Length: 184
Ligand SMILES: *[C@@H]1O[C@H](CO)[C@@H](O)[C@H](O)[C@H]1NC(C)=O
Image (cartoon, rainbow, N blue to C red; front, side):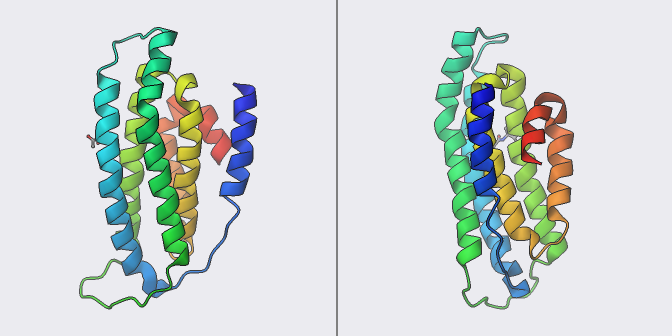
């Protein structure tokens, strides 16, 4: 597991190394992007919940690994969705159409919190049921891609990363403290 931590830590360093510039007028576009992302994530967290709920209590190591393999496609799909949303936010320099009732910083913060909450609660459910070891290899890239997204948004919503860190610590601190320590 130590080797896995190190390999993934290298991945962490590269994932967090891309700063960007964004424009405040992009808030609206980013809000749409986060809404779409959250919808997509919920499709996968629904699958994850179903798969996790079907695992019997106190699973054997073999059952843990079997469940982890079954969860992998949805966990990886969330990671990919977070990564491509980040890329899209970073590369978007499109003209932003002004709309009434736009999403300001507080509104964007709430949207991100809902996304993070959905992911964190689902991960907690997995970890409580299966333990951390069998899913670590999927959860670290997922959380790193989540932090990468938040860092991309931090440019327009200063302080967002602190908010997200607090939220993740609240939900996952007790069950995945070591994992969070790798990320923050
Ligand atoms: C999955 O389960 C978690 C933990 O109970 C919950 O917070 C989350 O909303 C659920 N997601 C879906 C889409 O049902």
